[in-house]
Image (cartoon, rainbow, N blue to C red; front, side, top):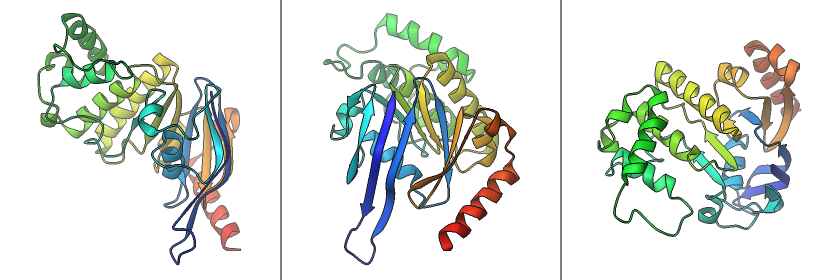
Length: 257
């Protein structure tokens, strides 16, 4: 479903601030696979998601989504294939618009017409049914301005919008990091629910070791732009948080050496 071949990216090349963010990264995700990516600051996690989404272009390598080469496809065109949720809950929604208007925009993504005459009665019924399983009471607040919602409610709405058109790939970029622990746990629960329901091919970046072990089919650790460790199946299930911390220390020592 998603294939990244020999992806490389260097920021500020030829200057004193040169930084190699991705170094010949190779990664393939099967349809419906949920991969969790961990790593220290500057390890290349978010850069990888930015390159996949088209927010930045790689210096070398190719990206294929469902066998389509999207390496040089503009971000707004790639958005028809990709859903993304950022760390900041304010980025995924339009604060001045209502809940139903935000959902309508997401529902019509990739279509030629805009909001037109507004939200239809059929869409309104559909949106209520979509929001009800979130158990946040949003189904009864369709005409409320999104700017009045809490961070957790906005992030849950963003998740729903990102998965609404069944994207080929869903990118979750530390999407619970800005939330309090209770709200973060609820948003993670909603994330897993949507991923399973829609069988979404998913990449999730997180700094939370517990979440890295709890979620996903496969775990990937990055360091200095490279994938340095992978685990899936029984191997991933057997890992503990101290195991991951030990891996971080070991990888750091190898890099220093």
